[in-house]
Length: 166
Image 1 (cartoon, rainbow, N blue to C red):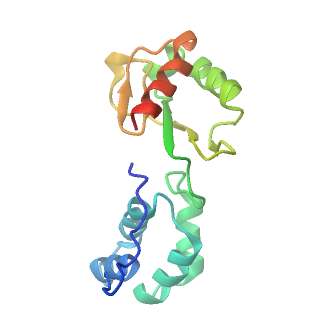
Image 2 (spheres, helix red, strand yellow):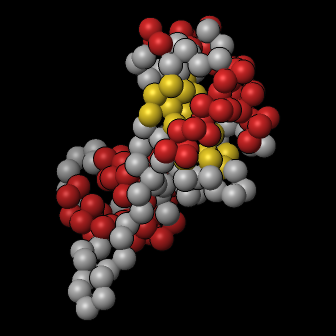
């Protein structure tokens, strides 16, 4: 997942409003709200309240419906994540090969639980379902870099090394 944010309009010019572009792309397409919300999250790194409030009338969808979807699916975030997204796979193979210990170790060192962002906004720790790298279990991703066969003793150093390269 990208953590890019929408770019502000350049001085003297006007860039298209990303929320309006998303609404235009998905409006009047059956079942498109989830896709529009995916685009919003891809654009901003999360679903900002202001963007959701703007999207609702543009797509003729009640704001309550947007929040039903956003709060039902754990994929969507309503707060800006940290600069580095650390995802620990909790699929069966990863779980059996030690993923819970990886979560515990990283939670302890970063001082946050899964689903939280560090106070300095550098790391967001999350647990995810199977990411399809079962032969490399347990797997952790930092931003989009895949770490394979991660050991609890190594996870902190590996995560910090990836973050420095970000």
